[in-house]
Length: 320
Ligand code: TYD
Image 1 (tube, rainbow, N blue to C red):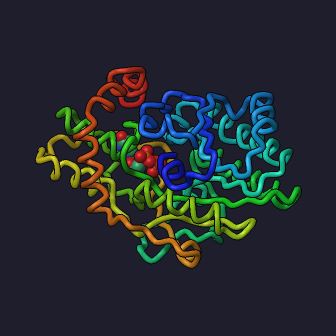
Image 2: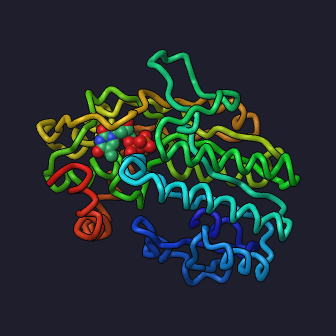
């Protein structure tokens, strides 16, 4: 949101958010009084609210980020994921079709492709078959297919983006990197699933914003673009890097029961997006150092989350 509001002073930019457990308006303090920024609290699955908002504002572009996104929560309760990610996407597609938007960008995930093996020469491309393994990735894959169908059937101008794992400031502490940073800073054990050898490809949030901006303005109608930056690390490498940067002991690592259906490896071949003019600016080493510094500088933000309703989820997920 900050990226677009700062860059496109000539656009009126609407932030539509239901402010569920991970929603947080304090992160938009810097832009909240700008003339080109508007906030609307609404549920994307609420057809009446969404259709009447779209008819009133006649948006030119829709960039659809609104989703339940945490795999562990989708294992605890898949139904919320179907409601928001599948039904919510269909409502947005109907509303966009009704007013005739110029572009609908659907922000998805590489997890829809399922998992890769540990052969470092294999990558997800846009041609890789969809084969999701978790309720989360199945709900995102379903929404991707609806977006494709609205393009093929109704001619809605669309792009689908599939990114690797994001990291950076204001990341909700349920995800591996902010969870590790905040727990290490509190001298608490860091739960590592299984043997910690699963691999993720890390994408800095600013590199992700630049990619979405490019796809919104230059993406070829109907195309899918993968977004990832050849920053593969095992989970154990990520956790050890954070512990070392903060000067703490690896005794904080606690191997716990593996996640159900835990995908071994994700890695993206970004050739198609690079041909459009994108390349990642962040190397993982620089990005993670800056991210750790951000959490050090903004302790009040994440300590508040860790002591609120998130605590109940944490106990349910990991045990007291
Ligand atoms: P996560 O941040 O949940 O993203 P995703 O599941 O979408 O990749 O997890 C990243 C990796 O870290 C994944 O392999 C699971 C692992 N992980 C742990 O080992 N412990 C944890 O407490 C969490 C949240 C994740």
